[in-house]
Image (cartoon, rainbow, N blue to C red; front, side):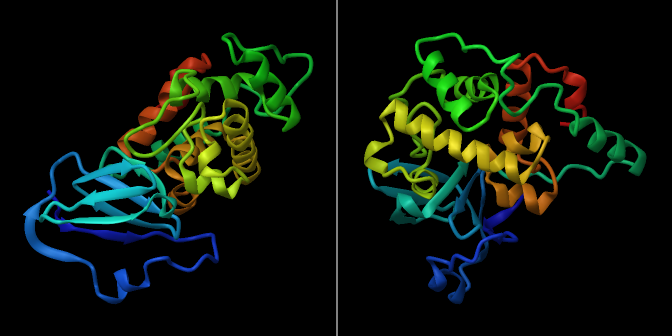
Amino acid sequence: MTTGVEILVLMKHSSRPSPFPWLFACGFVLLGLAAVPARAELVILVDGSVMKVAGFQADGDQARILFAAGGTMTMPIERVERVLDDEYTPPPEPPPTVAQAQAEALKVAEIPLHFEEAQAKVPEGPYGPMIFEAAKRHSLNPQVVAALIHAESAGNPRAISNKGARGLMQLMPATAERFGLRKERLLDPQENLEAGVKYLSWLIEQFPNDLSKVLAAYNAGENAVWRYNGIPPYRETRDYVRRIFGTLGLTTAKLAGL
């Protein structure tokens, strides 16, 4: 079991400076203290760094972080890119032949990621027409957008998670701002959908024809997918990808090894 508070600095594909230079200058790594609970949380900051903490709570415009050794830290919610429920668990290394087979299997999407007029249909539910139009506008398959919304908010435009994600597509304020949406407008279903679809479209450009990576990046952030060259070894993220594959009717064989 890991002890103390660990801060992992991920490989970043961004030139944004760290909003917390003092955090690293002070060597904010405490070892030999109380053990981190088995179900820790990963707080991913906008600069790409990751903090493993004992608890996280969004409170309006602020985020409160609880450390396993005691004490808390408060920061603006805009500094938080993602919060994952489960701690990082390194998977066992599979034999090369198995690893290669898994990688090839996950490249097969079995469903178009872009809008195709002949196959496209309006998703079910009260926001189906809105989803269809936003997806068509950004050349996305509306069924993929609808499946993601089902996993994120179950179609509730006023959903707010205790991690600070909001709206139909459960956008964190930092992500929404990247795609032109102010945090005070996050609960507007049309604006939330527009920003979320823009983000999803951008992820498909980063990971062409690879639905598993696109979904993993939506959940854990694109930096984590780049770092691990695939779905990160986070239990929450792997469950998330598996759940959306199931909603889309994709074969579970494509998720072997997750």
